[in-house]
Image (cartoon, rainbow, N blue to C red; front, side):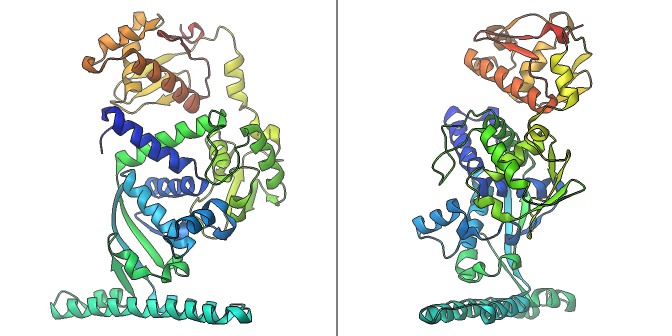
Length: 427
């Protein structure tokens, strides 16, 4: 995958639109979180159950899309499709295979679910037909598994342990999984595995784009861009107020609260986005975004109030309020780290933001001067790509990155023509 700054204008717009559509939907943003979590933990196999949260028919943006398109047999089917398309469209990695594991246990689960189902008399025929279809689907998968074992045995490529491993599972490809899973996906989410070979570049670009989106969301820059299948978007302050009221309905033990997945269907706030912003502000920590029962969240300050979640950290407050502050200031070209005293901002090499900071710090005697974008462009390695607007946008994005990483809001002074480091951060 190309670095973001190597894409042409049309490719960049297409990528940004894809990213925005994912982040603007709480369910798809949740999937992105789960993928990032697996990537950083070195996990390669996720189950569809990791992505299924509660009763999806109560979540408007899911149920409406499933009904509107008519392309999906169930909400679980829709979610699986969304996860696959997210990985492929954003080039986050390669899906090596999609497997159904524990076929015997899956069959028992389906039968048990059928026996416990509460059915109205006029629905009996439809429900019986549904469960018969799922059971038939499981048997077809078992037949596929048995044929695979037979082929391995005939070719002499299998020992006893491999035979045991394949006896209760079937491996499918991303191209043929759909016709083999059919109706089983609705009840077998926890039995469906997705094996992913993550792309380091793709995942890091995803994280950076997500950070940019969440910063804009919290600043109310997206107030006119309503989320999918919602009538309107509340200002972040109102969302935070509604979130606090909701959270305080649950017991908090030693700072931990267990939040049910029904939070996704609340209309007063966008749960995943609000929690994502608060996690980045170090107000809370989600133990596992991919949990299958509920979310366990650690709140760093209790009781949970508007003030505890909206206030700046004490150190950040002091930093922004101090006048004539002088700090050690440096930029490491090798590591892409801008150090402002004890705070650090991280820039990926070869991005335009990295080069902007590199150029400004190239000569220690010129760090504090007013840098005109035309001057930065002349020093930029790829002079043929020079454009005043490109560096004006890069300065703005760099300022946002410094705010996200350090909490320092006034490091840069930006105009339409230039960027200058605030003198109070210079010796």
